[in-house]
Image (tube, rainbow, N blue to C red; front, side):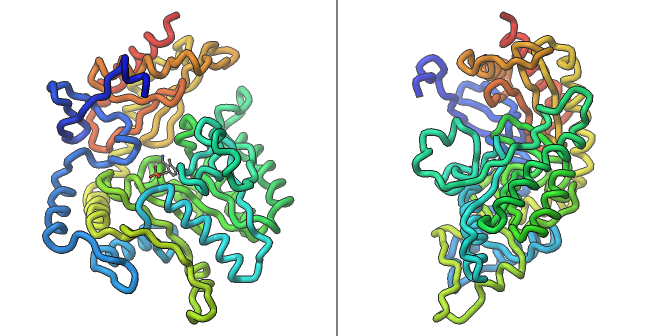
Length: 429
Ligand code: PMP
C-alpha cells in the first residue's frame, strides 16, 4: 500500500486486444494477461456479442434443483475436451474455490468408501494453489503462507522437480526423473494416510514460473494409481493453451482424478471455475438421502450463466481458429525476441513452456547467486515497463511474459524490448 505513495496506481479506462488505456491516453500491452486470465484480448468482439445475447436471456439462476442450457452445454464440451476419464463438472467461482472443492471431494471420496485414515495431502515445494485456507495449506510459497502457519492443514511437502536446480549438463527430463524418487519415497511412506497429490502441471507459476518436464507427470500418474492416492491437476493457470497444448496434462498423456480450471476458462472475462472429476468419484457420493453421502458444498454463484456463456464463446474461438498451432509460431518468435539476453551477465536462464516465457535475473551468472529480494530488482523492471507501454509484473527477480494469444509480432517485439531494457537498467549496478 505504501509503495503507491511513490508509484501511483494506474486507473484503466478501456481495453482492446492486448492493449489497456488509461485516462491520460497512455497505452500498455498487457504482457501478463491481467494475472494470467485473458486469452483472446480485452473487449473481444466475439465474447462481447455472446455475453450481450446471454444478458437478454438469463443472467443467473440457482444451480441446485435447477439448471440452465448454458451450463449444460459448457459441461458437455469440457468433458469432450479434457483428458478422457474426466466426466463430471462441479462449478465454483474462482481458482482457489475449485481447489477447495477438489481437496474436500477427494477426502470425502475416501471417507465414503471406508478409508477414514486418509486425511492428508501431498504437494510440491514452491507450489501455489490459491489463498483460501485449504488452498493456501497445499501451497508451499513461504511469502504467502508463513504468517498463517498456525491455521494451516498438515500437508506433506515433496521437493519440486523445478529444473532451475538441475546440474550443469543435466537435461530437464533427467532431472525430473531424478527428483521423482522423492515423490516415490513420500508415497511409499504416507499413501495410507494420504487422500491426494496436488500439483501444477509443468509450471509452478506463482513460484517464479519454475518449470519441469512432462515425464514427472507421467510417473506421478502411475505412482498415484499404484499407491491408491488421487492425483489433482491444478490447471487454473496453465489450462487453455498456456503451455502449448490445450491442457498441460496432455503433454504427459495422463488423465488426473481431478482437474481444476479457472482463469482462461472464461477468456478472462468473469469469475468462474470448475473442478472436474471421474465417474468413479461421482458414484461414491450417489446414494439415498438418508445415507448422508452427499457432497455438501455450494457457492451462491455456482455455474453462473454469464460466466458459462463467456466460457462457451472462448471455446468457440479455440474450435474455429487454429489457436494452438498459431501459438507455436508466436512462442518461437517470443523466444527469439529475447535471445540477446542469453549472454547477459545477470540472466541465469530463459525458460519457456509454450506461451509462458520467464527470465531469471541473478546477481552472479556463474554461481547463480540470487539478488537479495529486498533490492526489488523486479520492481525496477515493472517501472521501466510502465514508462515504455508494457505492463510487466515480475515475480521477485523473475521477469515473465504470459500474453493474450492475440498478440502480434510487432507487439511481441515491443514487449521484449521493454523487458530487455528494463533488465539492463535493473541490473546495471
Ligand atoms: N491455482 C493456481 C495454479 C493459480 O495460479 C491460482 C491463481 N494465481 C489459483 C489456483 C487461485 O486462483 P484464484 O486467484 O482465482 O483464486
